[in-house]
Amino acid sequence: MEGTLDKNIVKTKMETLKEEKAKLESRSIELDIKTYEWLDEDKITKYILKSKEDLNPLTIS
Image: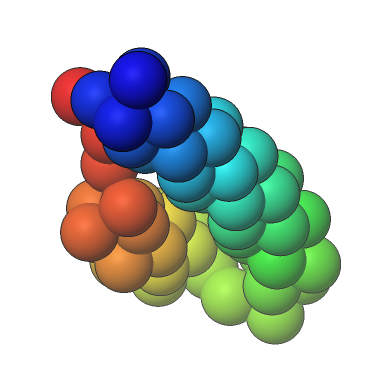
C-alpha cells in the first residue's frame, strides 16, 4: 500500500514539473518575441539558445 502512495506522489510531482516546464517554455517564447524588437538577428539567436540552456535543468526524460 505504501509503495502505491509513493508512486502517486512521484507521478503528481512529475506532472507538476512538466506543467511548470511548459509554462516556462511558453513564457520564454513570449520574451523572445518581445526582445526581437530591440535585438538584431545574431543576438536574438544567442538569446534563444541561452533561454533553452536555462530550461535544461527542468528537462524531464
